[in-house]
Length: 480
Image (cartoon, rainbow, N blue to C red):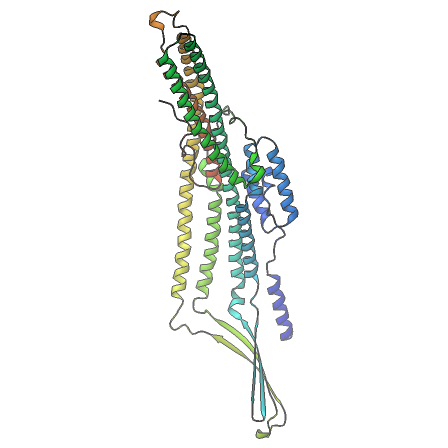
């Protein structure tokens, strides 16, 4: 086999090992990962919009989802189709794939041309220069880039799941805030009817002026409380709008009047820590980081004493020179090998840096595993705890408060007919009304906190991060 054939076969082998761009830019694995954590239907909406046709299809899907009263799942789908920050994250994935393909390519050879002329002679030299060190380390550098691209795919999954979780939380808060507005509006309407009735009694010569003032003051308190609730509802709705990437006429979508009722029983998870360790995307990314850095450390140690190695093939042509009695041109060929002598920089600093970087990633991965177990435990305990609290408000507190309110209202309405020991004055009636309204508002907050805790639990098992249930101030607090 000739030298030329050996060179050709070597180049073919190098080109065969080069990576190529995937048809979907890595988005297929992202869609599968999202579908596993949320649902296959939602995973289908994980798309990278790269042309006008895809943008038009996404717009049509968003319009169809917004046409009906928005559900939590529909809000998540709209966000995945319409959020531009998410699309920017998918562009990051494309950049990572380009870096992977680039890393798999062998270095381009260099050409050096030299022409020297003088008295009666011309000298031309051609050099073909190749970076031997880059060729030797190409397979390992390609493996490192492949791990980094795999890590980038997991990062895209994590970004998508984070947006989905944030959108679900914002949806829960928006619906709960709107529900508080509806409840307070109903309570204020009841008090307004009492105010009007008392005014009519006063105009007819009956009633008490103090009672009229007390009712008016109570109505004013409810009005101020409702104004605050409306402001909270607008703020929560705008947060949801931003996450879904909506503007213009699309922001006029309809939300349901209230959150779904509590489920019959909460989910039971016997091995919540194991679930977190197996499913957490941030742990998967940490494993890819450790794998890539381990290969990088091995590469650094292998090339510790050699940081530059180049091989050049040389062709030299010297023209005839009458001064030296040479009547024919002289052709010469040869090779040149360039490398650095490790006298001052022995590679110790590079090796130590690579080793410490690898150990840092390993320790951070171990710390994330410990934190993931803790986050999963507290997320599940919060989920169960908020369920029990919400059910207690629904099954115990509210029925008792309703019983008390019925009795107080009956005694106040029939005060003249009741015996003196059973009469209830207006002050007692106001106290009961305030407590009843506060209890109902707290029950609504408890139901909201349960659904937030359910979203936090899924986040703790898939992407990590702190919980949000109960972290925001309640939209309504008991009136005192």
